[in-house]
Image 1 (cartoon, helix red, strand yellow):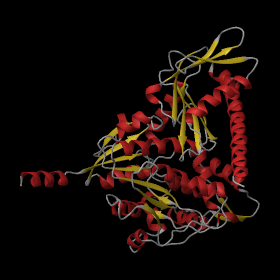
Image 2 (tube, one colour; image 1 turned 90 degrees about the horizontal axis):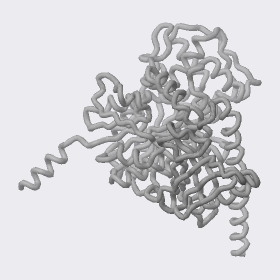
Image 3 (cartoon, helix red, strand yellow; image 1 turned 30 degrees about the vertical axis):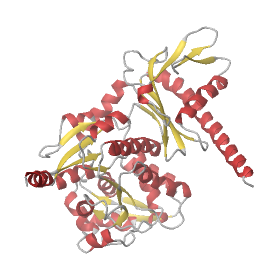
Length: 492
């Protein structure tokens, strides 16, 4: 009897929900919407947000380096459920030599491993709708990579896919408003007339609440959308009407996606270029939800586009302030002062190989590639020194970390060398990290602080590193193709 009472009391306790990427407009809305039902831990890579929580938001904030496996594991400690909202579109260092899709893979892999380690019962992930029609295979493949990664370690994954989400202070709302507020003429390329179903953040919250805590019923992917099918021009016209503006909408056929992307950046200079790039890419294709049980649940009472946008626009004002806007200037100043670098490259991994093999191969290849100027010397512990040949000057010292390594991951701390700032390289590290079931290895340098003056570093060392890594990518792609051809011939 006492055991049953204790079990009942435990079941009545609020479940712990970790929201990764909680500082944005959708994350903040989720925190407010679910705070009465869950013990929420809001995880953010913005240290300033963790120090200055959102007023009247009853959640616990945790600062976490999303690219650190150990910090992610600590952030998910004690979690029953996890919501993954991470989008690697904000700068993470003063210099990012990265493709944001590759950064997202590292963060998603760390989150999935941490969820498995902490016995999280369900991961709920928000992603964009799959575009319809003729879509380049590369775009379709990369859209599913994060979802595949989140489910790679056994935790049930529920994916809610939405197109254009209308949320308070969101980049989308402010970007739309800026188009009709900052000019009398609004160009509308003909390729933006693809069909969309914008969804209100209120209805997205309903969908999340309906799925969360039900991993058996909602394992898989579910599309949602609002009640209206609209194109980009209709969305702009509705916004102009709400703002009591009458700009002239001009259809144009010569405006290419690249030029329109430049135009949007001119009209909305505070919007991150990667966000505009994604929007322009999405505007080229229809994105409509497919019928499914979740869409039927929210569809009947979903808000139309006009009612979804109305609360966030008034008079001649743009959308409400983004929850992160007050801290982004502080964050950007911190990045400038830290003078750190993040470099991330995805390398095709030959069948049957792993990150440990990739690390050894890289340093052997580097030794030959930079000959006769530079030498890579290893010791018995697997650490490396990159030195000027014939002089003995150490340019970089990479110390192998067995406690942070396994066959699918090789970790080195940057512990010295003329090119590394000794006083600021406290977290500098280089890792080889397998992702996507071993199809690729990510080679990443995190939090590296160069010793060279910043402008000189960008013009010399950073440029040289980018050149070397692109050459290694090409080398490994050729090697992977050769092994595939050899394997195919062996089965004939």
